[in-house]
Structures are given as structure tokens and as C-alpha cells.
Image (cartoon, rainbow, N blue to C red; front, side):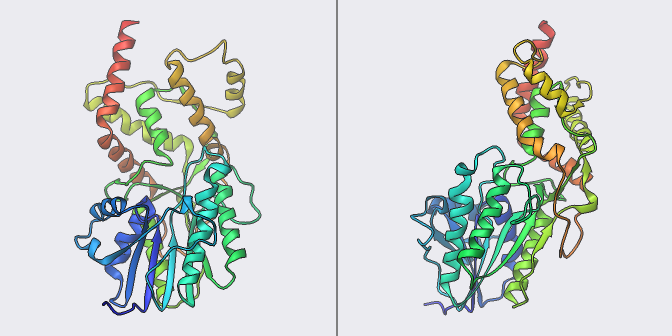
Amino acid sequence: MSPRPRQLVVISGMSGVVGSGLTAELLPRLSADVALAGLFRSPASYARAMAALPIADAASRILPVYGDLAKAGGPDDCLTLPAADATIGVHCAADVAWDKTLPEVYDLNVAGSLRFARSVAANSPAARLIYVSSAYTRAIDWTYRNAYEESKAAGERAIADACPTLDLTTFSCSLVIGDSRSGAIGRFHGLYPLIKLIATMGPPFLVGRPDCLIDLVPIDWVARELAEQTLRLIDGDVAAPVVAAAGLRRIELRRMIALIEERINRFRLAHGLPCPAPLTLLPFRRWAFLRRSLEKWRPPELPVQDFRYFERLLDVYKSYTEDDKILPPERTQSPAPEMEPVLLRSVDYWLEQNATLVLSKLRRATKSASLV
């Protein structure tokens, strides 16, 4: 039988973008008396996550814990975690969709967060928790732009109220894009539906405040900063919140759109396809007027189904292309990298991974246009 570890680190959402990045950064740096566990829904999801990690012996070093936080029997229904003298939880699991309602994300983002925290607190007398949140929200004194922001704040408050003995701190990161060196990322959330819209649908315009500042951070930098915070807790340092945001390296919306267009046009030219005119950014007041006239007006470039998707995405992004309120960077070990080259690599990576879809859409659109 293996000796009882001095400390256990357990990560929820280990198969997600932030959780997997943290695991890859953290595992090689753990001493022999610190065990690492991950929460998974099933053995199959554990196997997939281990295969995706860039560490050959990951499966032999990571203990699986099985459970679905979104389907908990109740907040008092604790997970069975490996025994340890001290337990540190890193709660990365969350439904990050911006277009869902609070009831739709509540079970995971609030009730599930509380269940994970209670499980960590109950596992050993010395228990600590890093609650991964968003730099676009905070628990108090905030006007929430969507249910995701509200649910992350509610989850943090619920843990603080229900687990007074748990040493709780937060890690709030901004909008995550690809690796700063390769552009690679495990899942295409956040900014990526907008990239898809521009690449495949050729919208006639987008909506937003041109000088609105968009805060983007690369996944490898986020993972390193979260790993550093976790290691500080392992070493017994005082828990202190970290905000991993771009700060002064934010990008204006108009510049971000221009960079995305630049990369998509480069892709088009490489495949012998024409490039459209640069996108126009409309103010939200004008867009509201156009929507009221929707029965009489619709861009001929977009079929009805595509136009409905276009409408929905504009609604989803409205919160962040009109209101750039965000927490400033705090307690990071290094400043965020320059975002423009990271964004270009991220768009290139998305195009590489979705080349078949993009080319099919663009060639179909080019053929239709030639027949008009």
C-alpha cells in the first residue's frame, strides 16, 4: 500500500482548457510527498484526459476521482477523495457559456462549486481551495453582464458562507486564447465563435464600440500563473487572490477585428479565394434600429439561418464589446505577454484545425456569389 501523502492536490475540470494546462505545468514540479488527483465524470473521460496531456506517465501519477458536480445529490453530498494529511483543491470546472441563463448554469457553477468545496474541506483538517473565477466579475460590488459572471460570483459567496473553516482564495483569469508560442488550445470557447463567424459567414458588419478594450490572455501564461499560486499554497504561504488579466496590454476592439481579418484573408489567398472588404463596426444604437426593421431588412449576404446565428452572437458579445470593465492584474509573477502576436497565432491555429469547414463554406459562398 502506498504511504498516505503529506498533501493532496485535487483539480476539478482537469480535462478543460485551464485545468489541463494547470496539470501539465504542475505535475512535473510536485515533490514525492504531494499527490495529484483529478475529478472526472467517468473512466473514459479520465483516459481521454490522460492521453491528451503532454506527459508520458501522467496516468500513473494522477489519481482519478469520479463524480459529476452538475448532478450532485445536494451540496452536502461529498466526493470521496484520497486520504491526505492536508488537501488543496483547485476548482477549475465551470460552464463558461455566456448565452445561458442563471438556472441553466446554476447546478455546476454554484451548487457544484459548493459541493467541491465541501468535499475538499471534509477531506482533512488542513484544507485550502483556489476558486478559479473570471477577471470580468467579482463576488461583491459588481454589475453582472450575464449569467456566467453572476454564477461565478454566487459560487464564491456560497463557498465563503458555507465553509468558514476552508482557507479560500481566488484565481481570476481573463478571456483565454491559444498558447503564446503555438496558438494551440484544447477547446474553442470565448473568442473563437466570433472568429468562426468572421471566417465562415462573411458578415457585412459587426457591432461594438471601436475603442472598447478587449482583455485576452494566452493559456500557457494562465496555467503557469495558476501553478505558481498552487505551489505557494503547497508551501504553506498565506492565501492571496490572483488576477491574471492583460491590463495595459489589452487590445482595442477595432484592432482585434483587423488582426483576425488579416489572418483569415491570408488563409483565403493561400487557397485562391477572394478577400472581402474590411468589416465595419456599427454602434449598438444603430444595430438596435436595424433589428427593429428586421422584417423589412436583412443583409442579402446572409441566409436566414445564418442571420439568426449572427444576431445571437452579437447579443452574446455585446457585454464585452460595449463594456470593458475588468479587474486589473494582481499578484501575477510576470505581466501578460504582448497580445497581438498571440492572437495571430491563435487565429492561425483555429484555421488549421477547421480548414475543411472554412474552405467548404467559403467555396460555397464564392460559387453562389458568382451565379448572382
